[in-house]
Length: 97
Image (tube, rainbow, N blue to C red; front, side):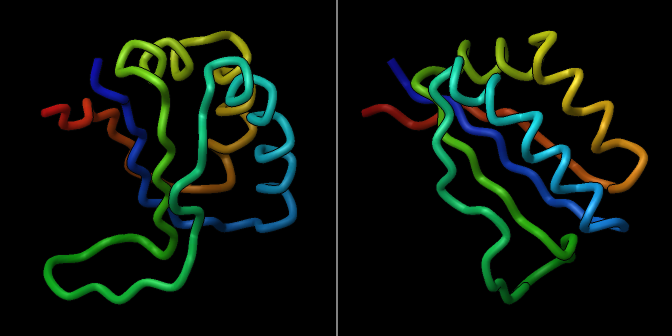
């Protein structure tokens, strides 16, 4: 079964308030087996454009990735993030050969 991934590109306007979002998302991420692969490290854009921060989160399955996003716990965390950041998030099914 292919894994699922969240790929996010985010601009943060209030770094201190964003910490509250990170605290709030820890429980739903643990519940759905999330593992951070990329969490805002150094990046260099070679083509196109992006936002200041890139995040890639791995889940045990595509369905787990969808379920986590739709969960009450994550939606409560998202409510903290929305007013202080702008982002693009997609959920992608991994390649399984």
